[in-house]
Length: 231
Image (cartoon, rainbow, N blue to C red):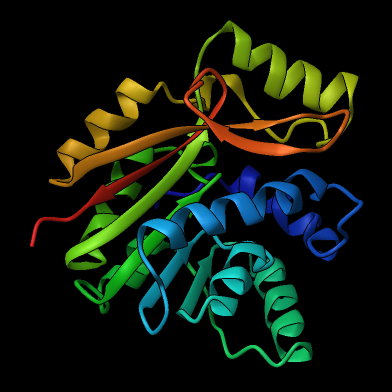
């Protein structure tokens, strides 16, 4: 099974903090409009079948619902899903949330979705290549895939671990493991192995002092990619 139980437990224990915009997930709330707009600007998601893999507490799933998508969210951490369900219900958002892995979900849902996103998840699983393959198989022919993760280099170690977790303390200690970071070239090879076409790559910058976020062409730390399954 392509899950790291330590990672699942870690995020399950943080479940009640998902919607605290000034808490442990503040950086995610700050970059979320950036991610949602990037996806919607490329693929207008209104009335599209949208799957968010590793949806956590539903931050991105709700943003895509607000843009008109028909959203399903899946995550292996059950407590986070319960938070997502409760928050969606309280805000009258009809989102289908499922506890489980993408691999299990795929068995009865292949070639189903117009759009699949898997953001800030790949660096938390044992086999990101396999997860990307499954995400691609969940897409309809011609469907669009969005992935984001963290580059693997000395700068990303200083920024994403030392800076974010220990100096600025904007993430809980232990959120990331350097050996799970992924170089853009490696991610591109995983996308090609899944028989998808890589179309765009952007860097995502987050300022831990001002809490401003922006997209750019610097892939040194956080980055997001757009790929497409052949028609």
